[in-house]
Length: 252
Image 1 (tube, one colour):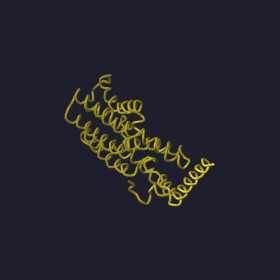
Image 2 (cartoon, rainbow, N blue to C red):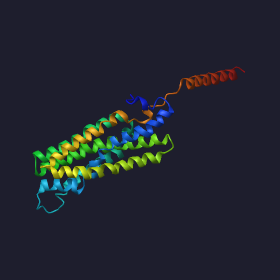
Image 3 (cartoon, rainbow, N blue to C red):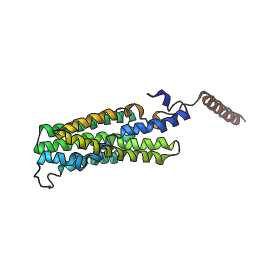
Image 4 (cartoon, one colour):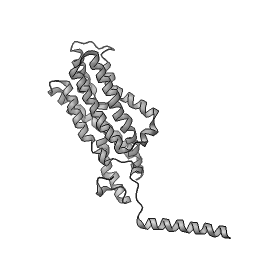
């Protein structure tokens, strides 16, 4: 189902090109919002605040308290494993389903990370943070949506002879969103009394921004261009003539 009738990529080649130029960048912008925390959890955003919350200000860095860094990095490990094991199955998932899964699982993972920090401490908090990032964020973002979204964006721009633009757009947004998180999330963490609350606010922002991709992001094969009535008549005529010629050749 196409939710923006004036940019319906099934109607004509012109509207299909308009969708690629004007709607697809917005869809990618929405779809890639979760890369903000995937790549932007750096020192000033969550790495040091969460470490201080778990280990205190006088903690000495060791392999044990590096679990915070491992937890935030684990979503990329999970995503890479799934993409390597089942790339064709990921591509077969309908785009709107992949976007729905992402918009639910990724914010849910952040909420569970916040709950782990709020209601537990020590090993329990570490395990809650790790598994919420590894299982929910890793599956919801990288495995389900990121890989197929990148391929589908390049496929769209290949239709207008600009596949590199699609790859460049995807790469730009993968850097743009973490950059924005470094500003607004750092300010949020600094102004909140507890770091776990920032996970809840971030989950809400990501859900709201990610939701439009469910309705406006498609794969090219999911919205094929419908042939015009004249084209359909010509195809029928051409097929009939070929059949008639084949029958005449068999007769003589």
